[in-house]
Length: 88
Image (cartoon, rainbow, N blue to C red; front, side, top):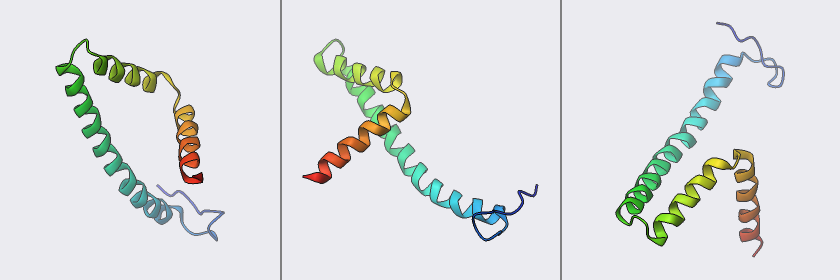
């Protein structure tokens, strides 16, 4: 369908603007997804091979914490850590 014209982009058609932004979104999302799958799978195998050890409990606790916290809280915490690291 026709999405109309963008009011913030000098009344250009919206469809080409969406595709322009979609390319950048995909360029960020695909590597992030691949990295997430590789790290999560590696940690899951590590945890499974060392069942009931400290590393198993640490990885499981970290995973539950990541699931339990809302996304915006994790985002704010990441921003705070990055700003702290950059300030040094």
